[in-house]
Length: 193
Length: 328
Image (tube, rainbow over all chains, first blue to last red; front, side):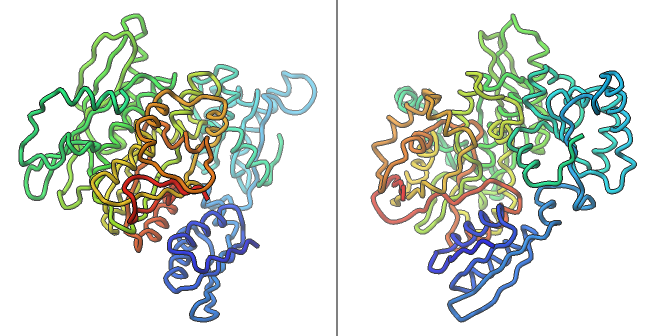
């Protein structure tokens, strides 16, 4: 748990410090010395989808506790709340499994067309390296559009799109960057396809 | 043009701008002109255009439009009409111009305004921008002057688009939407305005060609207050610091620095890169919002909830007029 002593700091400094801490920690305790600051922190927590509790230790000490639930995490990332706890699929090639390439390409298309039947749906699908070639194929695009409509986020590696010269062909998904992809791999339950 | 050269030119021109109805004219060096129509309604007029800053014509069109529309938002107004101004070489495919104009048109639509024509000339280099007309209730009109003692100044977008554009042009990074600075440049500055009527906002402007310091100086100009910058609070786009360190600071940043550094005092150990970035000319930069201290926390919370990358970067206080940078 991250603890911040914000006593003696003028408004809105406690809010600024709390916001920074909440962004990167699940549990944050902020100690302030006045009621206004405590009320502002409560408002901040509510707006950011964190649970807030305030303990008034004395007239000059308020302990404000923030707890982010898993759902508020994903709300902050703008994902579909139905997909709580769901996985992230990483598709780093345009084929599936080891063996004959032609077979692998049939399999991966079959896989993508099947995803929509799954419960729960994945939260996000990330296409990387030659995986982005799949995401611009006409028949695959229609499956991905269906998934997007169901709230699954489609992310395409921007560097890869540029490398393969596919900028004109992207019809579905959002162009992403390595930081966002690394952040996903680091924080989420990722399944490499 | 740099601020010094421009001032030199304008000094020799007589402008017929003495109407009583002109609430904000050339003399204030503000973001746009404001003309009173009735007691409840004033007209805002602005124009901005420039050469391409990214290769993708559709993105360039969007950025140029977001940049031009921003001047209306900086006055607290709502854009209603826009017209294109474009220059285009005869040797390039016309398709490219179509995409630039489509980018601009889509942004104007997003802003809730109408695009109703424009003018295109043959030019050696493509240029694009818009003349934008907006409206505002004179009571809600904000200018770059009006800061009050104790005000906190919020910045609604990170700094560093000038350096990032140099890096894109030099092929050091991508100019597509995976670049956070590109995404930021094509983002309209209208989100914060939704909350202005709930709080005591005393002044507002946007950060563009004269850099953070230049525009903060304009805010201090008509007051007798000092603006103290908390340097560590200034948000910078990821990657910009490294690009600036490797010498990708645009020429405009040096012009701004030469012109403004005489009005800047400092305390603490200077971070030279961040210092240079404070003069970096911005394209479609964020708003600088001067809000009464007691309202700052709540406005900030509202803007956090909108997922704006907003920061409290400065404070208006008694002291020697101009800018003071607190490095800590």
